[in-house]
Image (cartoon, rainbow, N blue to C red):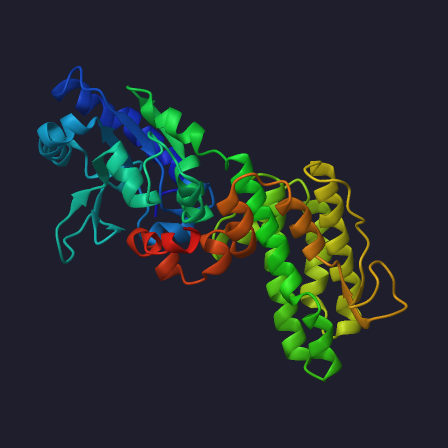
Length: 365
């Protein structure tokens, strides 16, 4: 195996040293954009040697204006297939069924320079075209993983400027959409925060741990929202979380929640995490200040003298306060309760399927 090179570096060098000279020679004056965006751990910068066993290697996207796709796509594809070298920096430039190869595997062997129109790519990947109008429901039905995939990576060349402008529009949610997602995330926490203690009270330590684990994930995703950073799907959630500004404080606390084996061990750590996030909310300044102290469930807030002896933050307080600041009716009355697609749906096969997601627009009508 050649020495490992991070995929973004490998693919940028591949474009500049091999792909661009072919385009300049065979298609002078062609207007296009070139980038490595979309799926793949390399796009997010998380690839390692392990990543090289499938769908990884010297590759990129070429985006053409709509009118040029029909005219030039097959010609560009043929030129690249003919002139690209079999390897680049020791890695194969030909792929079969997503795996890079220099041999003669089953199926056709092709380069991995994919050619498409930019609006067509976005509609397929996101479910909407960010070069046009983006509605609130478009944002809600697009998973954060997909938004992350098209705003990370690297643009190597943008001959008509549209790709760069579209990525800038997608960097973060409009303010009202963001607030609705924040409210929905606090609402999720409110639904289960008391169950960590209640499960343990009836002797179900496993159930307590399962609920605590769910809450840890919800608290992590809340932190991403507060820091205005898209959260990746589960494989990279912890890796990306460790890069947040709040990680030095929250990472040890949430790790302690996960390592605890009893509620007595778990409760003070999850209370500390609640309170850290409550304080982070107040720093945002999007509502009046909310008391960040935790307290007993069904008791007077911020006390440990009444109610059920389960430590909670009363997360519904934060959800209600944020909800009251949202102007758009759909976002305030519906989205702020159920959230976006990856707040209420958890199947990768569903969340990752653009056409299936589109069928849920009725939820927000």
